[in-house]
Image 1 (cartoon, one colour):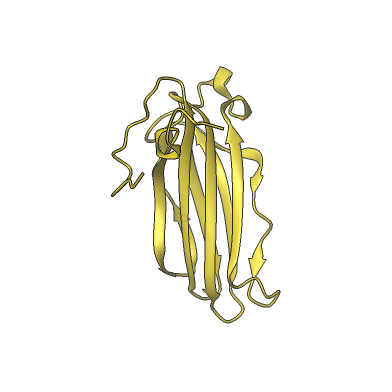
Image 2 (cartoon, rainbow, N blue to C red; image 1 turned 135 degrees about the horizontal axis):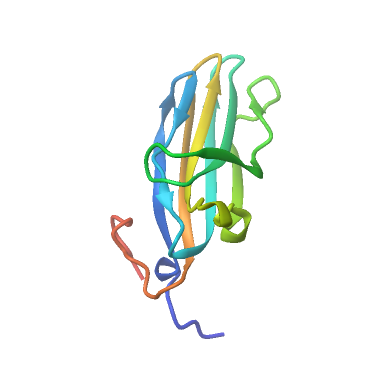
Length: 147
């Protein structure tokens, strides 16, 4: 099968947390508009978890880039990961389609809330936007593209 575009032309990394030790706290990302995309994909990579730590990750929606109204997106949260449950070195993902947003209510922005409980945990996550409404996608989210 011959493809007519590169994978990097149909998805872009929009927002994320690079691999690091993340403190026990609620961490809220910036918001990103899905107005020009049909889908989003959030991937979480958890490394070593601190003693008794927990990790929660969920997608939320907003009707403005800053301030405005916000709310959870139904069914777009991972099952809590726990160090006690042996969830070190885990991958999780959340998929989202724009029709799952409250677009009638003006909700076009998405953001991530990552909660680390008890002690710091090594993790990284990235939210990718995909299936652009207008081709091609911008390449500004990538440091380098090797094709």
